[in-house]
Length: 260
Length: 260
DNA sequence: TCGGCGGTTTGATCCACGTCAACGCCTCCT
DNA sequence: AGGAGGCGTTGACGTGGATCAAACCGCCGA
Image (tube, rainbow over all chains, first blue to last red; front, side, top):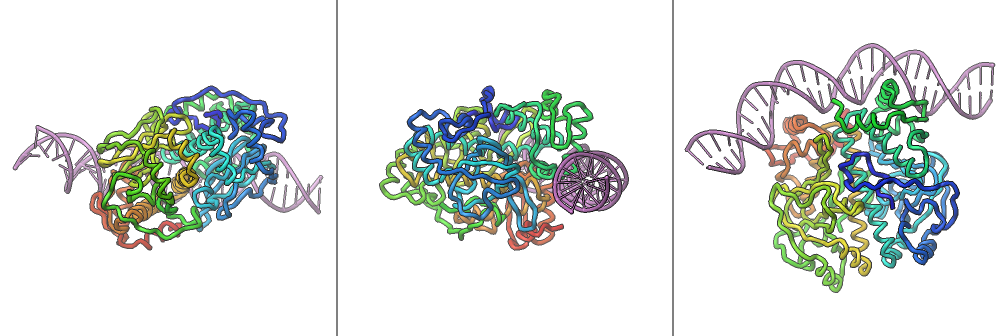
């Protein structure tokens, strides 16, 4: 399981960083043992025999059309979901209508862990493009991870990584200025695309400016202005949702240098 | 395990709310089976026999003097810690010196789960008053939770609750104004003190204004002004770190009503 | 081809919170 | 007891990002 797959680009948040090993994502198959996302998923490091057991665990697939919910806040929690392909956002809503995007998830990442504590989901998961997930019934995961030590360990790591990720975002929301936040966001996206075998320098954002803003605690206009500013300074080239990073080091400088 | 023990006072974040049952905290003993924090801890719902096994798990105690570290970012991760008594903060640091308080923890809560993902801690845990923790060696917890289903389930819930809590704070940091944040903070503290058998209306804050500010993404002056404002409006009575809540409903109104 | 529409960009203005500074109160140490 | 230093409060002022508003762009369906 690649520790840096979803890490925030703030070195101090995860001291032991490993190099990112891109994986081939082209030919997706059915079984976990054949899945190219294995290295990013719960299956990392499992032997043949255990993988077979695990395949019984992953009951079914679900296709989620763009714009529709994988699950909603308040729904009964029954399963986790491993993303096979596609792109999701999760958000929480307040009664007064305000909402907050709590994350963007891509292939190989696990959705639904918020539901364990209350036995019902506490946030919404919405597909930002046509997607496919593996359904992992939670009670089966628990019983199987009592048998397979590696699976148990992986699962704990995935949950812990989510906690560390959230701390990174709290840091971002609590003490960074707008351009630092956007820089952190772009570097994080870049790193995650790279870990999946895509270009680290050129990618297509699936979310709107408003969704980015909600995630980063900014208004969409501020996000747009920051994009424009980065473009003026030659750090990136933006064309709507298409992003080309021209100067990764420059972005990192903005992030680290306090830029006062 | 009381689901609301550390919940944020935003109803929508945890739909299934139970009533808070205060527990008696006066006479602390040695073994888990005798521990009055049992209902808040990993031991919830365990039978006699399993409790005995668990007691072998909790190897030792550690006393942490006020102002000193329980663990530091970068240190090897080996154990979780259950707080027996006292009060902690956790924070993350950036190279440029900025830091962010990621949480305040009190009796019955579990510290150290951030360390699982990288096998080293990613934040600092510092005692805000003389405290005592139970050391739970992580490898033992894993092996024991392969034997004891309830323990496994509790542990997963504790981790998931941490994730849900973090989402609540992201919501707070991303889309609330200063007085809403402070109101949420006070209500959260009140609820947690109550769940531990203390007054929900009157308590002593262990942290400084600066630490509250860091947690809430505000400067200490803003925190101080918000306290004063609440006092003027008759919502609370503040005297340094001593807080008396006079109008809980009023605070909730500030939190929910968007107060624009 | 055209119009409509959601998303984006950009400008002008406003305001909540940050910053800087002065001062007073507790707490702790000697 | 007395002094020092950390912490908290309050005021004056500055500013980053929110808000309001207008125009623009690309896409889709008629």
